[in-house]
Each structure stands twice: as structure tokens, then as C-alpha cells.
Image (cartoon, rainbow, N blue to C red; front, side, top):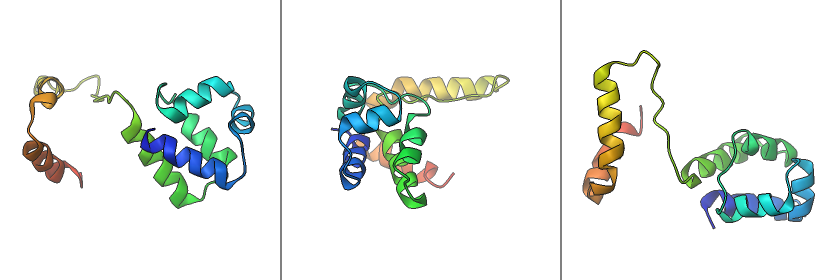
Length: 117
């Protein structure tokens, strides 16, 4: 299960909701919600906010589940402005294509540079 699935399940159970109850409240099938919770389906845009609203999550819980959803997605997009400079496009492309070959040390160094931006 993904970090998002773990948080979702914990919040759902804390509110005594079974999967079907929550699925009905956010207008998705039980099967689909189960697949999202277990990480076999991608979390659709807007779903986390709908879940947070239905579960009446406080500000910290909402922030935590949004962060968990972000790191649980199988793909990450680098969003560039339509008029992004050629260098920015080249940098994003190089980063995406090179990521799997970076060592753990290089990834940690990049994280330190970027974490507070």
C-alpha cells in the first residue's frame, strides 16, 4: 500500500467508514476507490480534496494526506511555462531522463538544494 493508501485507510477507519460508504460519498465505485487506496490506480485530480472534505479533515490532516498523495503517484510532471526558456526545457528533460541513473548521494544532494525552494 502507498503512503496515501495508508493515510486514507486510517482516516476512513477512524471515522468508522467502510470503503463503500466513502466511495458513495465521493461518487466513485467501491472497486475504483479500493484500487486507489491500494495504489494500483492513479489518484485522480481533485479526489484528495473531495476525500478531505467528506472526511472533514483538519488543516494538518489535509496537508498530510495531500503530501502522501503527491509522493504516492507513479509519475511526476515537471510543469514548464508555455514560454519557458530553451535552457529550462533542456534542464527538465535531462533531469527526467537521468534520474534513474543518479546515485543515492546525488539524489540526496539535489534534494538538499531544492527542498526549501
